[in-house]
Image (cartoon, rainbow, N blue to C red; front, side, top):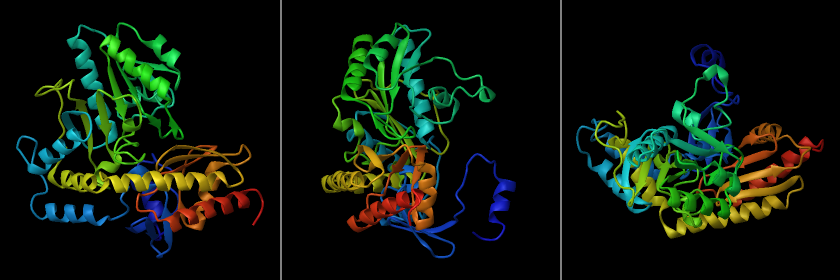
Length: 396
């Protein structure tokens, strides 16, 4: 790193992150480069953001063109990129109106508002939203209160009331949690921050049935799973359960901050003028970037490639001694390690070898590589993981 950079970071930034001691200055495709020009293979994509690779030409081109015409105008006026993006998102997902924002947490905040207002509209005066242990929905107060693993920090309390947690992937527990105050079920179809755990078809079907029977809403948090990550544009498309509300962000902007909350066609409009808002939401630049992402990803050949490459990676990883299982779909993979191995130590070892990964839990390596990853790069990643495991076990 540049001299003094770490010291200035500690002096001038709130210490809410534990940063690895690498300074990245450039990115291209699946590669990152540090200040010394050293090359790293990015297997994390900025936590599922740079899914088309770094500085993807469709995204950077769209940003440059739009930035030269109009950077910002408030949501008190029309802009064509915003409306084009809303149409594209709606017609290629669950068909209803879209609210734009700037992040996944904000998209989930909107979904919480939709669920509560919808519940009040059917006479529920004290609505509750059921959430799953291990799910992650963000760090703003509504989203944080909906995240059981984080909302228990007393130093950040009190939390927003109205959330009831139940065990992950437990259909019977979910049914027991339902009651007359249930406004919605909010869930990740595949848990991301917990370590890549797909929800079973039985639980999804149970959630859909219970919501249909009660009038509650089924909300899918596809912030990490969406926009092609699992090999379909949305993870729900590979299940039998279609949500009433869908949230997305991360990969949607290809590196530009944008999020969205989409209602189903049958749900339609719930929020009215004045119920919600966002100053920067779907600004012309962000909307143009997101349109470029969707136009690139939403192609059968691209989605097929994601599925095929994910299957190839999974197969190769399962042949590595020290890996006990591989979870997930497409290019959203959780690599379960033997009990004797520390995933965080393996991440550090891989970074030394020039591979960017992540460890959401002590026994799991999380891989979210960009869709432009080549077969050769995928094989080199597997070889590096195998070598890293050997090193941690005392080999060379």
